Length: 247
Image 1 (cartoon, rainbow, N blue to C red):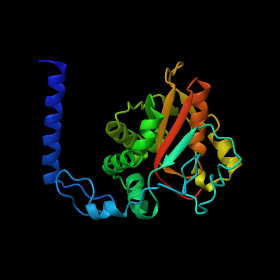
Image 2 (cartoon, rainbow, N blue to C red):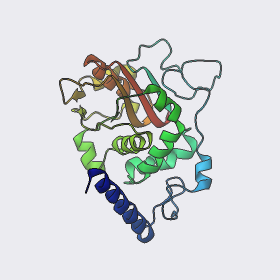
Image 3 (cartoon, rainbow, N blue to C red):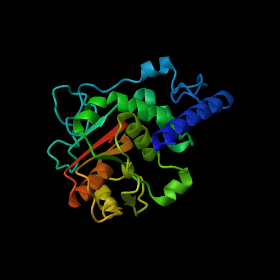
């Protein structure tokens, strides 16, 4: 039996198992939390509420800009960034509840749907960037133990699967358990994140990387990881998030 045939059989068994689980324990829509039909990840009406960000966004980080004549948001304008470019997939309004439940109410299953939709919304950018790998922003082991999972890792795997990009989950490690960055000023964020991450290898051997996180707020964490990767020889660092909050 060839390796390819084994993979096909394995995928078929997994597909049937997922259908059985969906029948006994139906998935719930991440937007309205109502049960879904087997094989579905979101209600069609809820999907229509998710508004892709296709214009009036910062050319550097992808955050929506209210002033349509500006090219950069206030965070990126005149500021050095270590990441090359980022994109935010959807407006926050319809996703606020889903994002909270995904991150804090133990709903890791939402990540497959949100990752798939992010990959679809940003398929042009994912193709143009032509990255060697996707890396999820890591969380500290204490936070992962409390939450039970890293939401960025679930998203990264879903995006990678739909965009056909390899995912590296163990290349970057978070070594400091930092407080909520949203509550800190820029100087405090920078000081807090200093030496918070490290690479697990001496030679990265990747030239173009896409970082994945759930929500973009200040960009401080993504920029810190981008700087670390570039110090180890990575040429280009991009990122994608599902949505963006207030910086």
